[in-house]
Amino acid sequence: MGKEWVSPHAPILDLLSPPRSCLEMLLWLLLLLLPPLFLLVLLFLLLLLPPLAMLGQRSQEAGLSWLASLQHCVAWRVLSWAATWQQQRLEHNTLHVGQSQQQALMWCLQRAQSPLCPPTGSTDMSIFRNHLPLTKVSQAPEEENGEQLLPPTSNQYHGEASLQATLLGLVALNKAYPEVLAPGGTARVTPTSPWPSPLPWPGHILDQVSPPGTKDPGALLLEALRSPGLKALEAGTAVELLDVFLALEADGEELAEAIAAGTSGVPLPGRAAELREALEQGPRGLALRLWPKLQVVVTLDAGGQAEAVAALGALWCQGLAFFSPAYAASGGVVGLNLWPEQPQGLYVLPPGPPFIELLPVEEGAQEEAPSTLLLAEAQRDKEYELVLTDHIRLARCRLGDVVQVVGAYNQCPIVRFVYRLGQALSVRGEVTGENVFSEALGQAVGQWPGAKLLDHICVESSILDSSEGSAPHYEVFVELRGLRNLSEENRDKLDHCLQEASPRYKSLRFRGSVGPARVHLVGKGAFRALRTTLAACPSSSFPPEMPRVLRHRHLAQFLQRRVVS
Image 1 (cartoon, helix red, strand yellow):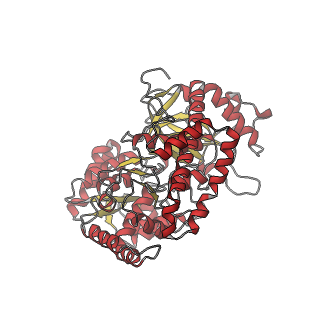
Image 2 (cartoon, rainbow, N blue to C red; image 1 turned 90 degrees about the vertical axis):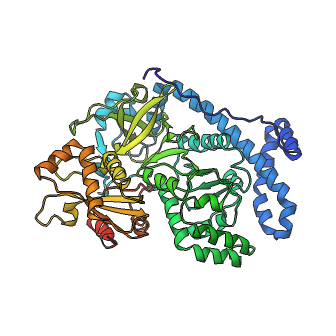
Image 3 (cartoon, rainbow, N blue to C red; image 1 turned 135 degrees about the horizontal axis):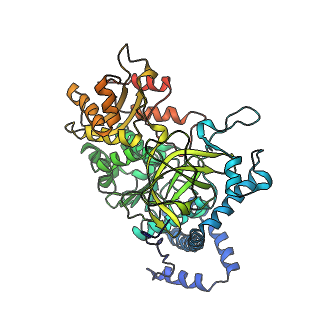
């Protein structure tokens, strides 16, 4: 891959940082001197502290605060040691990426329960590629029972990449934003976690605000609102966090009444008044008005999240940093983020498992794609589609996620995710990609006075039978802030921006083969309701990738019924 640019290595773990209190000084010395066996016994006893702490009343909690501090300090030291071990493994695997990928492939083949395995489990790449041809997720082979192989839908990934993303992400976050992971400094406001491999007991200790095991989004948000000293917010994905803030605006008065009445604890009428006052000032900067010490928002990156991040950053979370510990796709964690300070997510592609191949993406390429490459063969500035093989379904699946190589971490590529091939529009063979359309829409919305884009989805006219004798076209549904009606002039701006962004589209529009894009404004909460419907589907993936093109008529009609302009 060359050595054009080598990024800084992952953050150095500050395991021997100076203690900040007498209690931590004592514990710091004990942790350095205690035999490993005794330390394990101590950790076991500390696991019993949370139930004990919950038995006391508020008057007794002050007496147990030192236990919480002790438990937190031990948890953080153990987590740091585990992260050091994972950092060393990552260094070794990325320095010997060829050998590491061979081992990852062997691991997948040995654990696969499928008749598709290459003869004798061979890891020779030519045999592997010939025996398992490339497939798309929608074209994956069928099992003997006739059911199509679907991507895993579990909300918790397995494997070393998931563990590395969690451990190294926590340490990197703590280095970039000190004290964020202090007791009571972080709250999760969605049932799902942004950490790919949730850590049972350290996770509960380092996240004191969120009630353990709570799955009710309302209860999680209510507990976070009761804590004005938060320094970090966690959510499964940016899209889920967007829905949290939309729900906060819609149900703000009910939440204020619950806080004032002490529904989940001691009544806090003053905090309820602060919530009402913050909501009255509108969405812009709401998070910092509610939590003045807030520094960072942690979400898990996945397909279709960029628009939600932009909306949150422009409105509710204005002035806050965003950090994603990993990029996750159907099948597992495919990228590790070691740089929280970077404004745009940069990810190292680890050598697996799962086993990752790179398929070159070239403009104008035919459906029959060229041969795949291994990680060490990636070239900077080139774009590649990710191909994933795991032990759950032994198939070389083209994920549709396209990455651009921007650098190297040892011998592994550092990438940024740019778009998804499956989210392209094509009514006359023009193929308008997700990135092209999103850029054109962003330019058009920028010309609509006062408008902020929250969400959008496209539908090809044939899905809705909306051509009515006219040329096929795009149906575009948008949810906005700051604009209640769309004039015809504003609607036309999107089509002009699309023509500027895509010469092929412009040519078809000039010839009349494609009609102008039709833009529809939907009411508040339309996309939140759509995501609820999508999440209820049995085949919904995790993380919930936000579609930008709908292929099913009933979903398109779902939005069509919510058009207000």
